[in-house]
Length: 112
Image 1 (cartoon, rainbow, N blue to C red):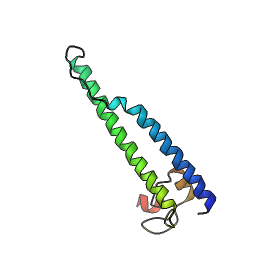
Image 2: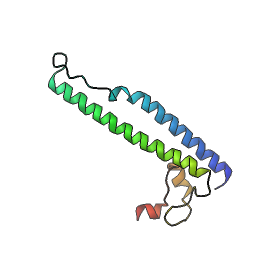
Image 3: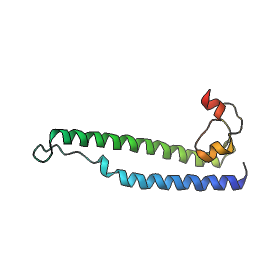
Image 4: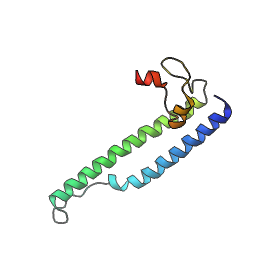
């Protein structure tokens, strides 16, 4: 992988990390504590609020995982290991890395 491709992938990763930060800011409200005041909210509305809170927390966990994988990809980008399958050692296809720069396995090993 040449320096131009690495530079392009760094930009892609940085852009996605910025998107995740924006999504995190928007998702914080949905994770707030649900009030259980029966006078202001009915039982079904509280259950709906608890379900929404649970979904927001699960979405946050997925965003955190993706951000962690992207940061790890940035670290690997600086090493000679980036772009090579961790299982078989073959080069990962450029289109696969362009789609998801955090992948660590070639399509053969990932599907096998």
